[in-house]
Image 1 (cartoon, helix red, strand yellow):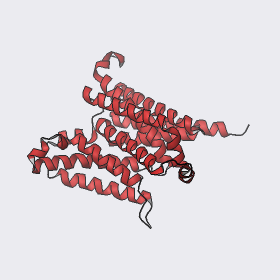
Image 2 (cartoon, rainbow, N blue to C red; image 1 turned 90 degrees about the horizontal axis):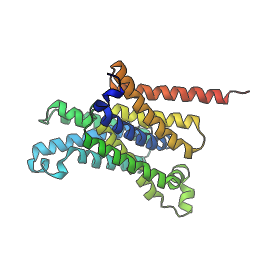
Image 3 (cartoon, rainbow, N blue to C red; image 1 turned 90 degrees about the vertical axis):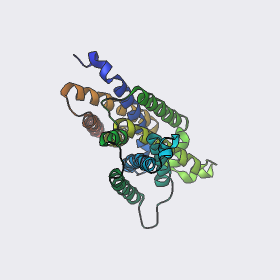
Length: 281
């Protein structure tokens, strides 16, 4: 059977992947511009830490595990949103760059995920699916969550485009014009945390990091107007997700790796196009 004839197998997964890829690509533009490019990778691991903490507390306190607060997905979202604010919004400690702080957070959360994972009773397959998602088979409910959250992130960035850009490029001027810089910054990093937490649960940590960096880098390399960069990055992320899934189906390759390689290929094409365009006469 052809790829299109098997749409009943991949439709939910592709729709969810395309949606979260577009959202991650948009927030990734700001991660690159603000030089916190490894923040999405750290937030993916921190999202996994939230899941592990929910499992651990549920094992220690059964009443917590059966409550709404004990849901792993909710715990991951809360922890990730808090970490996005702390890592992206608050100033870095003296004598440490923000990238160093993000790297420390990545290492600490990765180590804690492994350490806590040794102390929880859940089956390893169940934990892996919640930690890293399953881009091959996405449930309809998860697809709906991915669509709603991704749409909310994209709408927020469309409505707040000017203040987001102003506080990212020139916060002093923004403050002088009465723009609530800290509030806008908080909103920006909250959208980043929200997109990353949902995307990690849906398609996994590696594709999320790729979609948050590669399409944004390609759009920034090709275009000079940031107002065009954002939709171009979203389109590149969505195309990478779809084409990667198609390549995975046709050649029976791992889905996550195919989407990452597809995004890398689009970045390479953007680099070639940028060099050709800038070549003198």
